[in-house]
Length: 149
Image (cartoon, rainbow, N blue to C red; front, top):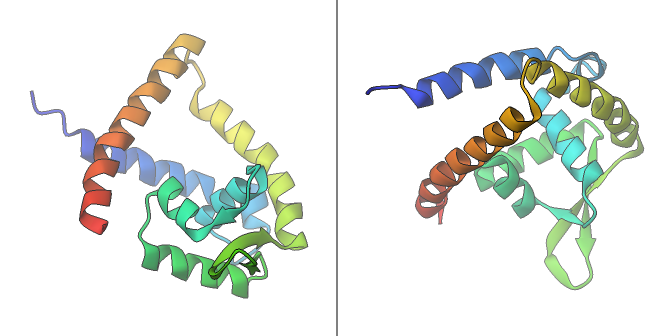
């Protein structure tokens, strides 16, 4: 059978992005995008230092795309790239106070957003769905990283 899974995923992704970009905490700052919100949340939630390479892997984006996003986030006063003593070539990503405040609001809104996305799903269905997404992500990730390396 011809399921057109990729087309469906792209369609759902577009709808999710459009709705995510309309979240009040994201709209609060005129110039912030949904992607910035996800990155802020990722850095905010991380127990370890976060570097550009971490974002590339987590969000499956190229080095150049990630660099452009981070440059814009610096201009918006959302992050600072801070040198690391052990290796002067790399910079860890640090949230500004402005971004930390936003992260708290975004965190609550993302939890509500996720609850709405999963409305009507049982706990077992959510676990299965997350496993399916992870498998799809790995299938695509292998091909992307092989080409980008």
